[in-house]
Amino acid sequence: MSNDKIVVGLDIGTTKVCVIVGKIDTYGKLEIIGMGRANSEGVKEGVVSNINKTMVAIGEAVEEAEKASGIDIGSVNVGIAGKHIRSFVHKGSITRKTNDDEITVEDLNRLNNDMYRTVTAPGTEIIHVMPQHYAVDYEENIKDPVGMAGVKLEADFHIITAQTNAIKNIKRSVERAGLKIENLILEPLASSLSVLSEEEKEAGIVLVDIGGGTTDMAIFHDGIIRHTAVIPFGGEIITSDIKQGCAVLSNQAELLKVKFGRTMAEDASDYEVVSIPGLRNRPPKEISVKNLARIIEARVEEIVDMVHTEILRSGYAGKLAGGVVVTGGGALLQSLQELFELKTGLDTRIGYPNEHLGKSKNESVKSPIYATAVGLVLAGFKTIDEREENYLKSPQIATVKVKESVGKTAGFTRNGNNGNNSNNGTGAGDFFANILRKTKELLIDDYEDDKY
Image (cartoon, rainbow, N blue to C red):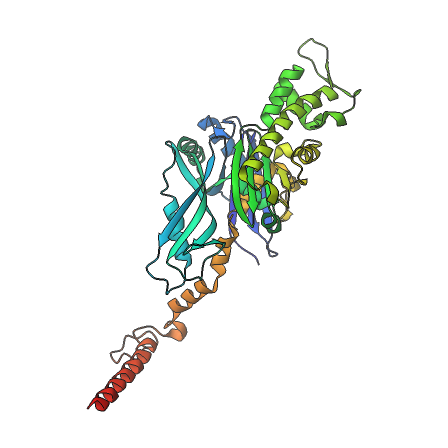
């Protein structure tokens, strides 16, 4: 169905700042109505290092997106990444007053909120708390305990932390650009919304987002996020290797990587040569495509090996029927899919953010480069944990809403008829209360008569 709500995603990356504006169309798909992009010069390895430069880039991207969409942007969903991101599993529990009542969403929220009080390393704070499996009165491996009876409610939580200073620098950059942060979301979680299906998350899958400064990972199984990691290498370090190995300028190295780069040297021709302009008054420089591929392969192999190590460390290596999905700008390197399959032994595909996309004014948004930005928009319409969406649709919630509306239907109020506070107490609630009271009095009278 249609939705008039408009959500804006802001991806502050190492190489680019991207703003995407979207809404849900009549078919339930995400329609991109505007996009803006600017070069990022104030971010290093996914972390804001220069607030003023980042603020300027955000302003340029926002202005472009506003022109394209025709709306004024006030608040945004912002992504966060960087090598400072840490995650761990922590157990939490609450004791309910009685097991006569069903476990409610409120009980889960209370347990969830308690986890935000978990002590973390100095200088860090919690950005995400995501439940794994629950346990009710020591009955374990419960995915959704709402509706069950029990006194002790426990859960293992996947907790993600970030450096407090890194969060503050993002907030300052965004606020100085005249914007308000709606949500702060870990970038691989945002990317997962745009490139993964619910079936893949259920089967078990690894998302690998190769950005400019970092490579971000997220592992899903049974529809639940199980492991996250940030590897401090991305496309920028590959460009740096080419710059040094081929003795060229940074912009030339980036063009070589994008246009002629391969991740497997054996696929490159021994005789193919690329000629690039030399420096002032110097002849053109010739670069062997084979040598270029060797430089790229060495660094990408290192990144893939680190990804494989994280997969093994997670404990889910044998439970990933969905294999690997690679997205981000680095996913466009030739032969990357084959290299991942060779190194990890898992089926691999390139992740395009078109899983939930409808029509768009700008088709380039369907590139893996914009997976995070699209995911940040989707985060405004759907949750990272599908159980949260199910809670909103649960009969229990609907029952509560019905109870709250009793006495108001057809103009009735609790204190009287048709909204009038009459003295005779003829409201619907009082009417049934009087019947119960009279019945109780008759039963007591009968009991007293029998007694004598």
